[in-house]
Amino acid sequence: MSSSSHGDENDEEEHHDDDDDNDAHHLHHPHRHRRDDSVDNFAVSYDNNNNNNNNNNIGCSSSATNKRVKSEPLKTEYTDMDVVIVMVAPVCTTQQVVERLNFHYHFRKIYFVVKQVEICPYLRSLAKNIICLDENEVIPGVTYSSLSERGEKLKQIGQKEGSNRVGWYLQQYLKLGVALHVKDLSEYYLVWDADNIATRPLELVKETTKSENYAVRFCANPVTHKSTGYAKFYKRIVGDKLMKPGGYPKDPKGDSFNYVCGFMVMKKEYVREMTNYITHYLKTGADSHLLQHLREEEKRFPWDIHAVANEVATVEGGHYYFSEYDTYGSWVQKMHSDEHQVDYSSEYARNPTVAVAQSSLTEAEFKKLARNPKNPLPYKFPCCMKHEKICERARKAARSSDGLVHVLVWEEHKMRYRGTSSQCTDALPRELKEAMEASGGDGVKPDR
Image 1 (tube, rainbow, N blue to C red):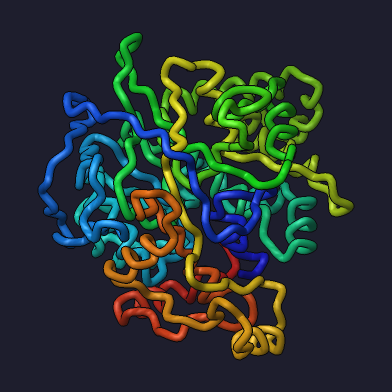
Image 2: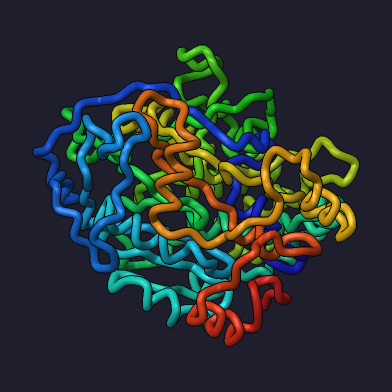
């Protein structure tokens, strides 16, 4: 994706940024809890009814038993919880993303925050509970263009990396900003990356005995190499140590984990509390001079964080980045520990059975890889997937005894649009192709 778009999608929706190890499979260690059928408020209930407004038979079976995975419900309903998905543009598998979210969880509403509103009719056609929002209208005054004007260093970093850090930051701000500006959004809402496909249900919240609030189940993401970038940025904007999911400084599980799983339940009250604290800290602390160029009404989220992000960005290296997932997860862990639980059991796999080419490849290099018989994984393949194929890949990617991952990460936007040549051997469905043409293309056109 070009630098004028929302983040090279590896930056926009990847489950790591400076912690990205590009592993195709990520196993989160088994640590299963018994489910309580009595939870209400979210109308959290479990049943064997596969009815869905789009598809009635999309549950995946285990590779070990060829039956649906036992010890968990077929369906988990959160009928008073909303989902927020920030995306550049829909792809072929966006339909399956929506269908499987509704099938496994039955959320109240699914909010898409999009770059081009021309694609909204197509998105709304996927399910009755779709709400489509223009990214330029969510946070007053915050657009790609306005952030770009005050992100010169971030733009330079993006040019050096072949990515788009301004767009990457925008999508993070939007995930938090909806809590402050979308009035009808549910108090608890699930942030869900656009390339995540749910293949089996996760337990998102649990009741607590100390509070009327819910304890959120935070996914613990294993990382394979040491990185301090998120921690440095958190210290800069909060003045405290970044918490690891299992505690600081070392997770009791013995491995290194962070919160960057590509999905997280957030609470509007705590997003507001966190962003207000950051604003106060930055306005009164050592970095207050970074906010001097802002108008008084702009000395708040996200302009305060953006000022720091641009300040620490250096083309010479050593720069570090903000993470919405790590920041919010650490904040709740420290400030609301009785409403914080860690889920080590969730398992996801990124792009299993295929090889996604790097954006830096030239056309000649790409063609050479694509035709090399020694490559263990194909570089050219069909990118669209029906539910049967999704289940097949979810089974092949599993490392646990259950034989099925919870989330299949399928980065189709990278496959189709990043770099000099598409890796996809199939075309978009007619309805989606028409919607994309009406919006001006694949989401790579210059931002407004």
